[in-house]
Amino acid sequence: MAVQPVATDLGLLLDDISEYAIVLCAQQNNRFRHHPSERMPRQVGLDGKRLQQVLLNLLSNAAKFTRGGVVTLSVTAKPEGEACALRFEVSDTGIGIDLNQGTDIFGAFRHIQAASGGTGLGLFIAQRIVTAMGGSLSVASRPGQGTTFSFVLSAPIIDASGSDWSVALQRETEPGGPSPEPVLPRNALPEDQALDELARLALDGRLTDIERWIERHAQEAAHAPFVALLHDLLERFDFAGVHGLALQGRSHSGSSMG
Image (cartoon, rainbow, N blue to C red):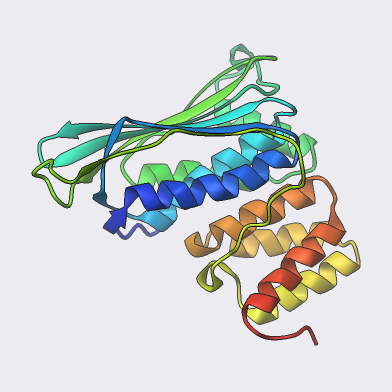
């Protein structure tokens, strides 16, 4: 899990993540909330693609185990000299689990995902990336009351004078209506050959092969938005949706299916 910190527009990154989260939450009639700090540094030094990958994996997981509820992304920023402590929290009002049943908390969540037909790969990847970025992924959960995943990262502020902290706006979406279709940038999509393969697998309804396809592409940070949407469709056995997503990706490249 290579991490490459660069100057990152934090507000823009969180806006992009929120757009994908709205789509994920709409699948099961969930409301999405984005609660940032009142003021946030405009630019920080961190691996934005990896951070996006972590948050989308956690948001996808929260949306999947919540129905007609609320999924919240909270971000708080605290200045620490020329750096900033960023706390990220993804919470839901979903099924939750009893953490008293075992000490391997993340193993318990992966077991639940496996029992529902998933791989639990997204949570495993999120845990590894957070560790590689110098943080520690924590979880709190209660049966029937939901789950909260959280972690703290320290990142240098690009303009440490404090004059470049911007006002961040809270955001909340109501459930209902057709799910919006996000526009995925070309660099967020796998190669055309891989999309062709995915489309063929979806037409044949080959669940296990599609899961293996996801495993091959899930660790690529740039593909996180696409993989999150794909995983959500697969959890609902929506092979037509998987096929459509592959075709949508292909259309972005200006090519047609062969």
